[in-house]
Structures are given as C-alpha cells and as structure tokens.
Image 1 (cartoon, rainbow, N blue to C red):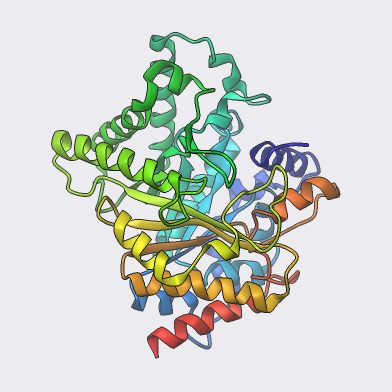
Image 2 (image 1 turned 180 degrees about the vertical axis):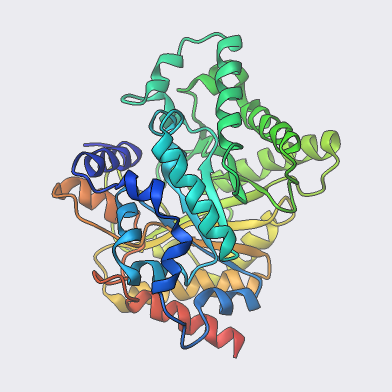
Amino acid sequence: MLDRRSFLKLSGLLAASFGLLPYSDILNSPLDEMLLSTGKMDKPRLRDLADKVGIEMGISLRIIDRWKLYRYPEYLKSIMQFSMIKDGYTSWPDSWMNDLGTYEYLVQMGRFAKKNKMGFSVDQFLDEGWFEPPAQGVLLHNASKEQFDLFMQDIVRKYFEVPYFTDLTFASEPTGASNVTPPYWKTNNPMYRIYGKDWPEVTYRLAWDEALRTGRSVGKDLTFVYAAAGQIEVPKSPHAELEFKHLSELKAKLTDSLGIERPFAIGMEYHIHDGAPVRGGCGGPAVSQLKKNELIEHFQRFNEIGDVMINESSISGPGDPEKKKEALHVLLEAAIESNVVKRILFWTPFFQPTGNAENDAVERSCDALGMFKEDYTPDYMFDEMYKIFETYTS
C-alpha cells in the first residue's frame, strides 16, 4: 500500500491523466476574476470571527481539487471563508520546478490570495519524501555535498520566483515518533547524510538569504515555519520533549547570528483519530490523549520559542458526529484560550474518492471530513466550528 505522500502524488498524476487539471484555464483565467460569481456574504465569514481572537484560519488543497476552482462557485465561496490557502504542488519538486503550467498556477493562486487579503503558503522547502521513489530526487542519495548544495540553491531560487507568498516551511518533519515508537531523527535522506541534525539550520539560512535578496522581510511579510509531526502534539510526550530541546537550540543559534527575536513559527499537526489509526495514513494523537487544559499549557510552553501554528488539522475515524464535535471543541477552545496559537489550518477538507478503497481509507485518515458536503457547501463540522468562534466573539 502506498504511504500518504506517495498516494497524494499518485492522485495528482491520475487527475492530470484524466484531464482534471485544465492548464489552459490556469494560463488564461486569473483566479481573482472568479470572485465575480461568488456573491456577497450575508453574515461574517469564519475568517472574520477568527481574526477577532487573533487566529488565521487556513485550508489546504489537494492536487485533485484544483480543477474545481473554475467550475464550482460554491467551492470558491467556501475557500473564501478562510484567510489562508496552502497548496502542496511544491511538495514534489519534479512536478513543478520545470513545468510552466504548474508554476503559472502558483502565480495565479498568489494573485488571488493577495487581492483578497489572504495568506498563501507554498508548503515545504525540503521533505524526505523528495528522495524516495518515484520522485526524481532519489538520484541525489549519493550526491556530493557540492552537488547537493547546488540542488538546494536551485530549489530556493525557484520558490522565491513565485511573486506572492507569505509562508514557507523550511523544515518538514525532520523527526518522528508514534504511540509505540520513541522519538527519532529521520536519517534516510541526503540532508541528514550531508548536514546531520543541522540540516534545518542550513535550509533556513538558504531561505533567509534568498528572502533578503528578493526584498522580503522574514517576520513581517513572510513567515518561516518548522513543521513537526509524530507525537509532539501530545503534551509532555517524549517527542515533545525532544523537539522542545532541539527547537530551543535552533532558535538560539538563529537569533544570535541573524538578530531576529522569533526567527520561525512552530507548525504542529493535529490529525486526531477517533478509533484505531489507519495503516499508512496520518498517525496523529487519539481523542483520549488530548485534554484542553494540558493543551493550553503545551501551546504556551512552545510559544516561548516561536509562534504556535496548527498547520494540519483533521478529525477522522468511525465514531459518531457528536464525538467528533467534542474533539473539535477541545482543540479549538484550547487554541483560542491559550492566546498564543496564531493559525489553525484544516487539511484537505474536500474529499474526493479515487476508486481505490485502500488508498481512500488512507486519505480519509488525513482529511478534515465533515467540513463540506459533496456540493461544496458547509457541513456539520464547519457549522460547529463557526458556532465555537461565535461564542468567543459575541
């Protein structure tokens, strides 16, 4: 069975092969023109409510979602409920680095976000999945340091050619852990082989230098994010302790050498499961592992290092809707009451079956199900989230 990232890439390739990604539309139809068909909002948007408590609401798009932007006004209207878009095209460098249509899509998404005062994330700078089959990066496993340095310089240059984006993940999940696995560094990649545990600092400095060269200001109009996964989400877990120590040291190095007080934000994943985790899927914490008061202290502790962001969030499993709502309340109320969580991003809430039941189960373990219906209008989880923010802003 494919792992999560391989599946996401495959779904994109299948979508393209069936003509679901109309690159001619991307090249010729600016996204901001689609706003003409969305109509006016008859009440405050979710983003407006969240903004009152200092939280940016985000949404991520799957590769297979993109063609909907041009065909379904309700889909676009739902996206407009959020204040940030994350797009995973750059998760696979061989799918966009030399593809004019894909690059133009990212340019248009940036235009759409900028015009509508939204943040736009081009996702991660480097990821270990880049160096696994079928990605072309597998060829770099035996590269020399000089060869790999050139590769990274090319990558960062291409990122910063996108005219507008506000968010870049400079390190994506360098470490891991599970309920049964102690925390560990992911070592099966050229970054670790060449730079060791310092590789996040190396990628940060590359991105920092390119930001300066292109006139962007880190901490003002651009946020650098360290994305953590595993069990860092669980307060006082061994993985949380490892990452707190590592991130404290990384902050000290960057602050001393670059003179920036809070050089990066900490992106946590909360793929909460009600039931047994799906093999090969998103292995986040169980509902039973999360308590509101403990989460508040957890967020506030990591805020000593950098701004806290929930960069991926979903609640999945076979449980009933009421139990999922309870989990949503725990997560959102802890985030709001902590007064330090700056972003909550829901992961690919527009689920679309691919026809492969096994891979669809993997995808469901990651997606924010119950957020939107098949016609792209709000569903019960979105409605519950809206009510929570109403409560805190009334």
